[in-house]
Image 1 (tube, helix red, strand yellow):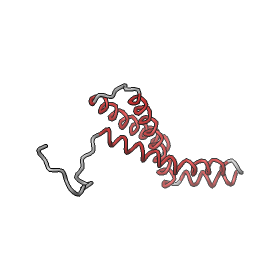
Image 2 (tube, helix red, strand yellow):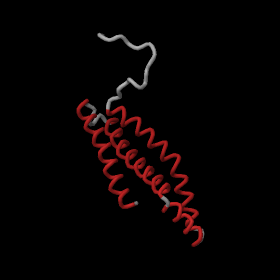
Image 3 (cartoon, helix red, strand yellow):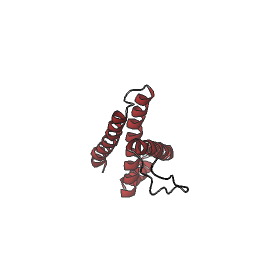
Image 4 (spheres, one colour):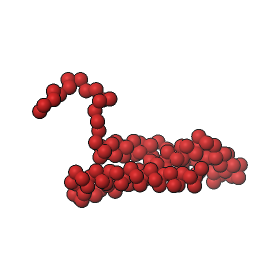
Length: 124
């Protein structure tokens, strides 16, 4: 080893490799889904109650902040799905080499962001 290991970890100086970033984003997207899906299910249940409650729910979803929450939920769902498929493939030792792992990480990021933008344009 040519470098001394730090005694106190400075998290701002640690450079995370791309597969590590995808892994952390997978956890974040899972937490986002865990927190937001009950909200969406509540909205769905409330919208089925009456015409007035549907109009209120449509107003919530039509608000720019509501659309932003739905866009975040959409990204979380897409990223969690594609990263989950990647991790399943890694579990069966498919694409476990360094180059393939980096390429699949790029694929997860590009697919989740591209589909979020494409579907988000339709949503907005």
